[in-house]
Length: 414
Length: 223
Image (cartoon, rainbow over all chains, first blue to last red; front, top):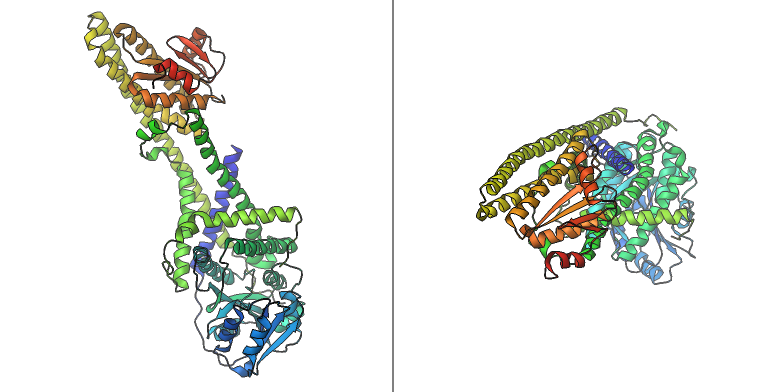
């Protein structure tokens, strides 16, 4: 009985969140594109630590940007790399007046950005990871968005982050995830509830970030922490869906696990640090929905995973147990196997609730692809199967494992 | 800082809550409706089986009155078909409702009816066996809802039913069925004190009977 109550509470909460997001989606209007009349000065900070393989392409994409050179200062930070990153940068920036190299012993990404933040005087700055590439018009798009939507409170505009040229199945699955996340970023932006300013290419108002004390050097996810802090001080964060930036997603399961571990543990750190925002009306939908949902999702994922594990392993255990009882002589069962479905023996409540959640999920999946001009079949259909069947289970497992590590007070490094 | 941009989408939370509640209410209502439909379906089949049972009784009476033992095969076939129908209908409803933790009054009377049906078919099968001397074997299987080894015994019996098919008739009796004197009578008759207990050809076997032992009893180890 208790099992059923918990199960339906999880179903009900998930359905409520899904319907709420659907209502937000139906309400949200696409903004009309405007032309950029002036080009504000922007500093670009590119922290690099052992990025010899990708840094050149990153810098090339920056050099090709459709933005006047006189309004652009590029700071590449060699954060104590032990490979050839420094020499690649030096070779690239030769004869480029607005590109400069800052080199120091390894101090971490956040500290590197803070160091440059103290050096710059441009009204805006952005960070670009050294394994990310931008489209030529991205900065123009994002600055248009910034200037059009700034009513005085706007502090950050985030880009539309996509997976760079997915090669293997893991990267193809992540491509789906990133596309779906872009739709949720739009919805969160519409609700003034964005809770992360992605490392690659988020544009910040320099004055505000300096006023808030720069980036936190102790957190695992400085891009999430700064977003929470900005929200805490009632500044706005908006999402620009037309500013595309590409990032190289993890190719191996190990790299994927390490990335997600950092994200999830960083996320939990932020939730704990900003727990005073949970369900607070004065923070609007950010407090009432986003922060609350983020914390609730840890429990939902944990309970959901436990239940899914129990519901999957129990029949499996029973089948094995039965197998032992009849010495695994399954031939008589196979001979009389029948696949008949009598609708009278289907639980309609479970079917309708789970069916509704699934339908809303599929709706968002298809809409997300349409809004980002991406095809579902863009890189073949194969990755769809693991994406829908196992991906969220794997992510949930990593999340739960991280929660256990946090409870055990284990620390990880960037 | 100017906080005027902050808003709580109150009407959307309320709308989402109402829609969620409506979906749950719809699912629950449909569930109750389907429960009714299940009982109607089971009762319709039970009514049909009532007529089948009357026919079987008449066949038995006819055969024994006029000593027409050459027509025993017809009786055996009818009996087997009726028992199969029983396990295809009431047993499935009971199994489903147990898995969904449904404990309505209709369910309890359905459970009682299923037990009684099994008992009367068992008695008829025994009588038919005596009169016709057939090779069909009968097993009376006593179980309880919270008995740990009963599902295992059910698995082993199902296995033999699948192998021996028409040669084996299994009559499950749930001794948890309340207020049914017939169940008490049969429990006293065989002095059933533990579960599972099975009766094969009037011999009582207490506790879980495994595949190897039943193989010896039911088919001399040649199943």
